[in-house]
Amino acid sequence: MWRVAFSGYGWLPVIGTPKQAKPTTGDPNLQKSNSAVLPSNDISIQVFIPIVLSQPSIFLKQVQRIVVIVLPILLLLLAVYLLAPAIAKSVRRTRRRTSAQHDGPRARVALAYSEWRDHASDFGYGRPTETPLQYLARLADDEEQRELAWLVTRVVWGDMRDTVDENDAATAEELSRALRRRLSMAHSPLLRVIAMVSRLSLRDPYALPAERHWWRSDREAA
Image 1 (spheres, one colour):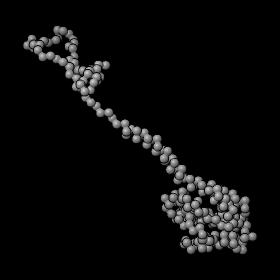
Image 2 (cartoon, helix red, strand yellow; image 1 turned 90 degrees about the vertical axis):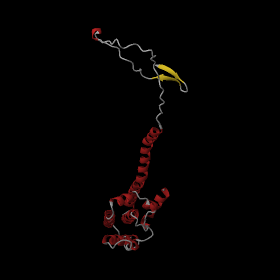
Image 3 (cartoon, rainbow, N blue to C red; image 1 turned 45 degrees about the vertical axis):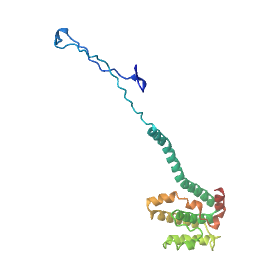
Image 4 (cartoon, rainbow, N blue to C red; image 1 turned 90 degrees about the horizontal axis):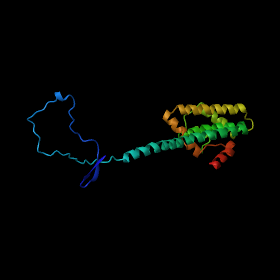
């Protein structure tokens, strides 16, 4: 590699090979000469002109590299944050149902109604201080909701406290599932997704006196 000194720039490398005339090749008899062409008195020299090239900026590449690394992590954290309520509600539902199965039909009836009220809370219809009969006025008149409200009222406070059986518990659970399914289908898919990841029922869960024991344990654990 050749280096040439330039004033103000210092020693700079000469990149590449300067263009020169190609030598004549082939049969000498075929070469043509012109006697009228005389040698020139001018001096032939090679002139090197330095060209200052701007260095490409690496800032954009650094930003792209950071985005490629950080963006997937942020998306993962966002997904965990959004899905955490759904996972927490699933775990809580499993714990409550296991506890209600152990406590008997009365606890199962109370839990079935609480699941309906928590589901409604996630859609923005939460009134945790209202009794089942008071809550009937919040939504349109519905036979299944009315039947469930009267059943849970009789089981928790009324004449069925000591006579409730497995059939009553199964009826309450079926009514609760039907009401939750119908409420979900009455809303758009986007609202159903929002309700699934909602934290409203986690912050203020609905619970009846028949299930206060595990409700307190949930709040203390939180």
